[in-house]
Amino acid sequence: MGPDDLRHQLLKAYRRLLNPLIRILIRNGVTAIETGELLRQVFVDAATSDEFVLPGRRLSDTRVAILTGLSRKEVHRLRHESSMTQGAGTQSRVARVIAGWNQDPDFTGPYGLPLAIPFEDDPRIDAPSFTELVRRHSGDMAPRAMLDELLRTGLAELDEDGLIRNTGRTYIPNQLDPAAIERLGKVLARIADTLDFNNKVSAPPLGRYERNVETDIGLTEEQYQQFNIYLRQKCQQLLETLDNWLAMQEGRIGGSKPPENRGRGKKIMTGVGIYHYVDQKLPFEDEDNNGSDAKK
View 1: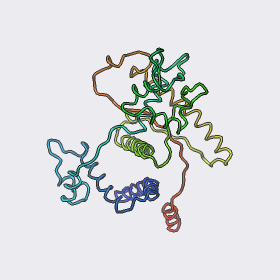
View 2: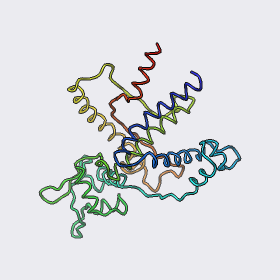
View 3: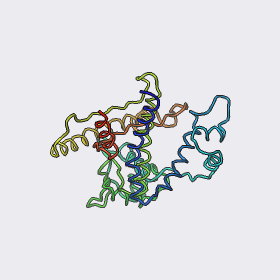
View 4: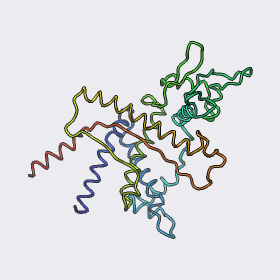
């Protein structure tokens, strides 16, 4: 395969990658003009990463312009425009609270099960409360707002005694809210980064784990529903096992190393994601196939 063929395949792959992302933008009223500006910004962001810095040289606007095909004036504008940065979003705070409820010894009972807890602290008894759980694991999020979110997403319920019970460990926000948008960006970026990393490493054992299993001839609708249930059960078990292992390494459960005695070296923020997909042919892929058949 020559350079032109490789370039065509790469652009075709990116066209497929961007299709579901653009559908989300169109559904929410974002135009091609706005997206074009964003794409130029992303090109500049990527070109200014350490990978493209020449040894002993400063990464100038001229070099970024050469890498991206943009003008130096536009590169300068995009590099120096102020950008708003935000701290951890709702998704990460909810996830931390759920993890604490299932892993913090103060909030778990026999066999490691999360305790049913009252909303507010009671100075008369030495018992944990939901307010303390949120204060300890969520930072500055209001306990009432956190409880509303857990009730809304089915991760908590109120029992007949007025205690709050944890009913799940997986936080999946509804469509179109800020947490869903945050999750969308993180999940897709992590998958793409893993694929990019594995394409760059020379020895397979040095790559990140990335495998998939798929059907050969397809499933019936009934078989698909059965697979969906089986997949959720098995993957949830695996994720909870991995989550507990990571918590033990970080000293959050098990007590192998208290947080203050953990190593002081560089920390690697890592994790595992599992996704279920259903293949769909896009219109341009049918056109390409028809064209190929016609040429034959």
